[in-house]
Image 1 (cartoon, rainbow, N blue to C red):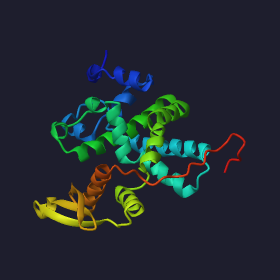
Image 2: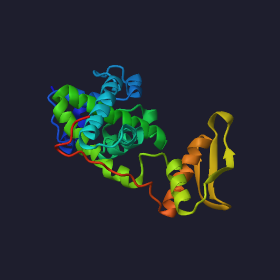
Image 3: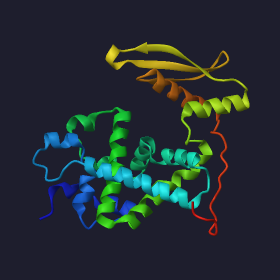
Image 4: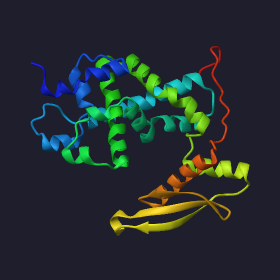
Length: 252
């Protein structure tokens, strides 16, 4: 008997990622959010948090191994590159590209929540859980191939746009290099109760406001403002020197 939850046609995920699971329950479980089980206590599978725990470690190891084997850049630079590839923003982006959202098992409240930040967090965790599920079902080699195909391939973009630095640092470095001016930030407004405030922050070069950002904290709003300013100015991150490892270079 085919379980009812397979009505979501999970085979389309398998086609998309190039992995056919022997244990289909692992694939399904990777997409079960804790909130769903609160409303569906007879659901036969657990939520995805243990798979996420495993997948997070495997993702970091696979990216680390790839960078170590292919680049001779200093440890600090490789660490920054890795962070840009495995962080929640990147994982959520890849999850959206794979269209995992339509397959998530969420509570009614979570499924109707329009908070993009909260949904991205769920999607990022689901991608890590999927990586954990692939590892348990197929082993290291196929999991590594998945990570390289869908995540490590973002590295050229990370390096070109300077995504290995946070937005405020990228904007500051670009502004100082191009204009000789250090950006400043100013709170333009705030609203909402103390426990749920929203801040509007402007970023300025000298007295000129370049852009503004909104966030639930001043820091978050500053980051949003810096990202907007980079777009307004069309500035990218600082250039980085890439040192590829040749076949005859020693390891280490």
